[in-house]
Amino acid sequence: MIWLLMGAALFILLWISYKGFIKMKDKREASKVIQMSLHRHKPSKEDKQTCSFCRKKSKKLSFYAAENGKVIGVCDVCRPQAERRALPRL
Ligand SMILES: [Zn+2]
Image (cartoon, rainbow, N blue to C red; front, side, top):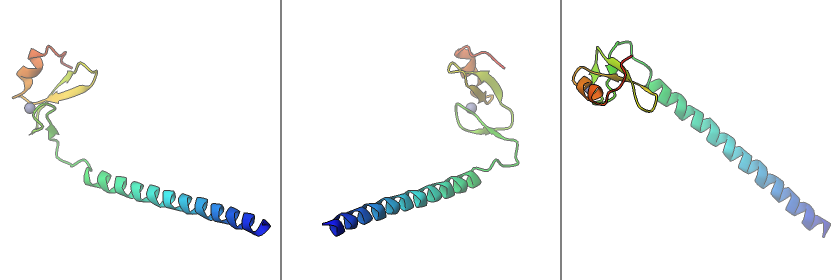
């Protein structure tokens, strides 16, 4: 009977360490993915910024404070939209 209990305990111990190993591996894998995506989204040296409305890149953006408190950059084309929404210009 004692051997059965010890066997069960050993099995549980192995199972827990196996689970921990998998989790650790996952975490390492996840951080690798994050590093890769960070690398991919590395800010380029060009000074063009993306318009918050049309997502097009524009050299000159006007900055407004949006309703949700975020700062948005708006290109010349989309500026009337921001003006219509009466967003305070920064
Ligand atoms: Zn735009």
